[in-house]
Image: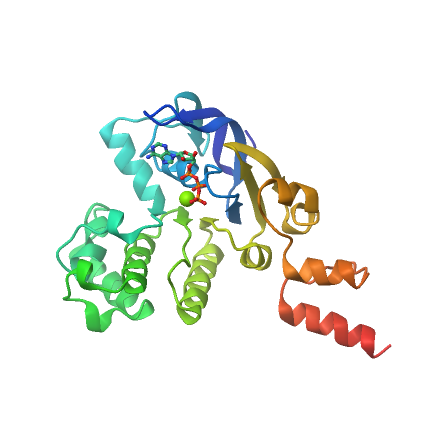
Length: 277
Ligand SMILES: Nc1ncnc2c1ncn2[C@@H]1O[C@H](COP(=O)(O)OP(=O)(O)OP(=O)(O)O)[C@@H](O)[C@H]1O
Ligand SMILES: [Mg+2]
């Protein structure tokens, strides 16, 4: 295992009790401190991989290593693992358990053995960051889907886990909040946290991620930097994915560029530069 790896999957397989083999002989190293996007079609195994990552599921074969140490599934080790690996579920209703928004955020923090004053400050900050101040005394199940999603994210991110795993973080969020969430994730990444998101949005993944993993039928189809992974149209098709629009435009206009732009501003600058020649 490489030193700059946070979690290593070694030949991991997982079957659900129903018998469906969701992850098959999977080997992948998740690079530490990076922004990683996990892509793949419906049923490719993304959510299962994420549940394996924070120990909710245990491999049927193979093992996972966290910072070089094999996962241990006893209750104490799992508590430690889960304060290091925070998981945002795709469906908020699976995650929400407390009677109020405020208590939902405090729940994980109380397990982290922090002083009450520190907990109070952290909660006050995330309530503002996620626009939940007005909702703080409301029961979570009375919130809208997008508000619930924001609350789930607030509860996970408040704990500042080393590895933040988000299953479809922007699903059900309006564009403004989706941007806010990604900005928040970027801030945490700048503080050294590793972020892994599962998404179907190739444009978002191309613009945001440093490292891409594409799953297909429970196996890694390809992984690497976004420019390389997204340039291979056939591999993307195999995984029910499309090429990001920016790469598509660059290729169809026959623009060869040393640095392929990663966002619309970069594309605009490249096109303006070419048109003015
Ligand atoms: N609770 C479950 N019981 C039995 N099989 C399951 C269960 N959850 C998922 N599976 C199966 O495991 C495989 C992988 O599913 P998973 O949910 O990990 O895919 P995914 O990549 O997250 O898909 P999506 O993009 O639809 O969210 C699929 O074949 C699915 O039918
Ligand atoms: Mg899923």
